[in-house]
Image 1 (cartoon, rainbow, N blue to C red):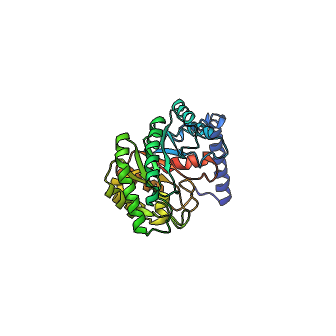
Image 2 (cartoon, helix red, strand yellow):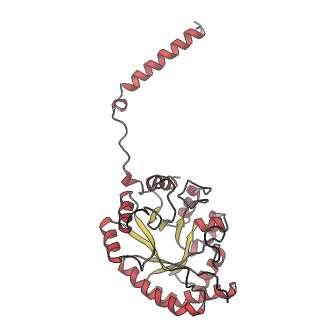
Image 3 (cartoon, rainbow, N blue to C red):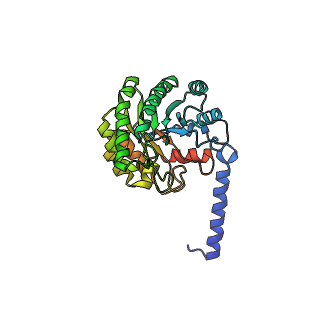
Length: 301
């Protein structure tokens, strides 16, 4: 039997109403929807262990409250920048109470640069002090920065001095069982006037130093801007990677806001055997909860 167009539309409408009524009769449609999101599980990702950079997340809050908010989202660790402006006892105790690890902190920054001989003694003294700090707060890694350009030094001289400083620091680090992670920057967006960009020179330095306690803080955001081919360079440098950080580009926000396909990049790191923390050195674009969801989505493959 054939139906006219009017009869077909009427029949379809009746079917839709019946389907709607059936749906409304289910428990889900009677107010028993899927349980509200448990935000404490967002940071518990299946492959990658993320460390929230509490210098860039929750910036409207006091420092210790940033750590508390990190724990509420379920992330397993935090990282931060300088240690000398922190109440380290309070940070250590709070992280212990909340079950958070401190993935890494900054021991030596941009200035004065370890890329000049006049700063060598100060650098080594700071390394000794920072190793004690690391033990005190139960942390195993600390970032060191090569330094900004020294007007009276050539590029080769600056990088040679960085190598020398890390060679001299290696016995201190090995004795303390604390890893110094050297961080290359990017010149185009964030750090013009620095002396160390991309993976090539950093790999050369660390391979010359040849210490298990001197590796690279491989910030994928800086690497994307400087050299791209993130997965290829990860394969080539995995033996010298001590720590990974990330942010998307452009914007330096969380994964999923820029051009980097972080699902693929994080899978590459995982497949290469990387199991340490990945630092979230990124600015939440639309609030920390939305950023945490995007971070979790980047760990799906």
